[in-house]
Image (cartoon, rainbow, N blue to C red):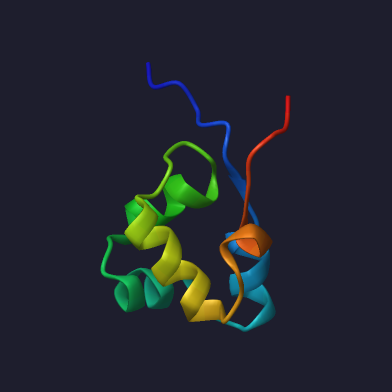
Length: 71
């Protein structure tokens, strides 16, 4: 069983705000829809490159899109 990541994100909210489907965003950043679903659900942490591509797709900073808990 894969351990969920501690990284959380607001990808779904951002995507819905601009009216973009999962398939459209996945195609734009070069991943499968299944990969995007896993990232949105916090089951998979994107690579830094993919994280930047997602942030740029919404014209936001990484910190606005991804959060990591402070201890």
